[in-house]
Image (cartoon, rainbow over all chains, first blue to last red; front, side):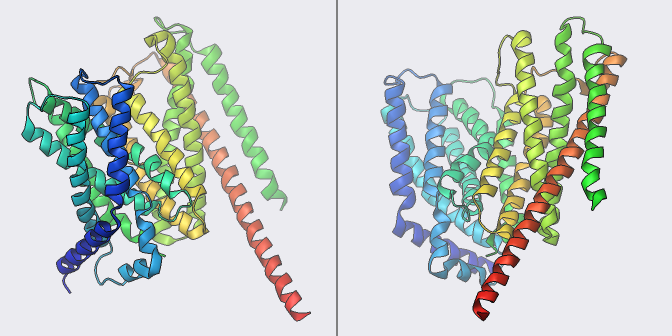
Length: 224
Length: 235
């Protein structure tokens, strides 16, 4: 069986598992929207928030929602020998990671779209000045964030504190990404003179690094 | 047996002597700076501890790679011990930096790229210890920790490059043009690197020795337990 076919089968498997479990939807999205509401209350309605703040609030909720959704994801694979089955797949083991990344990205993107709608409604924000940039940054940030959080979820799967460890390990690792997506979101929300290319480069470098790291390091993580 | 027990004492005396000389150079011999006055003396502890923290994390990184390639637990022991010392030196760096920043920048903390990336480094390795502490099984713990140590090390070059990539107010004591200070201050700083490196060597040797002893003790306990079970089976 070719690597590509295995990849698509693994993507399908992860999509089905996530669709049945609805973990990202029920816990991640609900948590993210709840966080938005709490922040809206804490910031006193927050309708006049400057772009710097509102972009930060939005991404903070996306980060927490993703981390919450990812916590304990790999636990299900350990049940009923599913992990052993994955180990038997006749392909490079990093492909298991890439397939999971692709499948989870679809769910995180969908959850993020719902969060963005909730954000504009709850915070009464004007629509972004550059909608194309805004959509691109949200999508790229979600995909990169899913990559690193999937990796961290696998890393902490063997830990007794996995639920708390995912956010604890994820946030320091994701801070360059966090800074880049916030600056680019601010650029898409308000008038600015020039494109902040340095943050585009940071985002691209970060995504490239997490494209490469699992290929090098995912195999030892999968050992029983 | 005596020689094994003796080397930590001699190493401690040597490192203590070197540190004592460094204290003399930093507090007595080196002159006060023209603008900062005696506050410059913080630099003799801040900069060497930062450099040693980076070195310690580099050792962690190299030993993590070696562990994944060769699967010998001694690399994991050195990796973890070096990370512990790295966190200690990073803490010293952050605290001394904050003490210096208060009178000079009029704030304990500012979101400068170098400060922020150093704080991230501290959190990354604090997470490394949480990860280690929460995984059962010596080999599994070593394997997972090694992967995380390799990923976490990516922050070290980012700290180094942060002053070039982003606008930073952090002063550069040493750059590509050399030391930005008079000779006596540069000499004290250089001696500080040596003194802190000796301290690092001492801590690493002691911690690895302690960890090996803990491992040997665990194996002995397991052997005694197995022997007792066998004995009870025979009775």
